[in-house]
Image 1 (cartoon, rainbow, N blue to C red):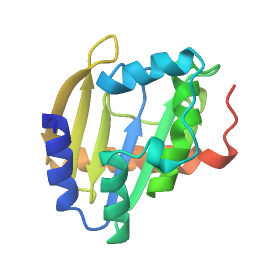
Image 2 (image 1 turned 135 degrees about the vertical axis):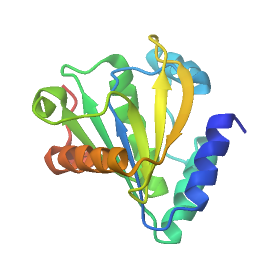
Image 3 (image 1 turned 90 degrees about the vertical axis):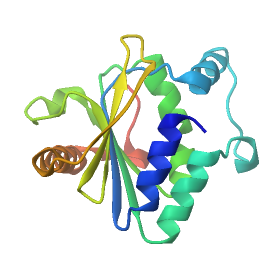
Image 4 (image 1 turned 180 degrees about the vertical axis):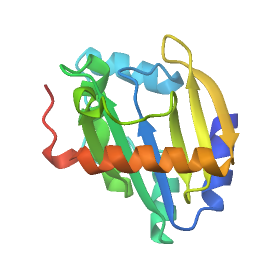
Length: 174
């Protein structure tokens, strides 16, 4: 388990109500996901059988939602979308199957929302796990933040995005 996974699972273990995730990049290049994305670009597609794609993250989400934690993920994307966003969209059924609610917001519709500079997870509206990235989308490591005023900013930004965003099942890739 990586340091990022350990930080995430530790936070999730103490979460009782909500975990929200705001993603704002048009591409990511994180470890195993980068290799899978390259296979996807070459024509490979994950099958419908969860046994072929289910991983630890899906189990963590399923287990947390079973105890009442609501998982919401919002993605702000440029349109037309990048190949990476096409890949994410095509694989989002996996997040949904694990129990996440996912919405998409075109970047043009987010221009008047005050947003933090980094992607983040917010647990129970009080603990932030910032996701820092390198210029090419690799992970630059997580950072935990428990400042109440910053958690309030993140919650407000996420809620504004969520309200405008389109549910995954209705979002059409452009």
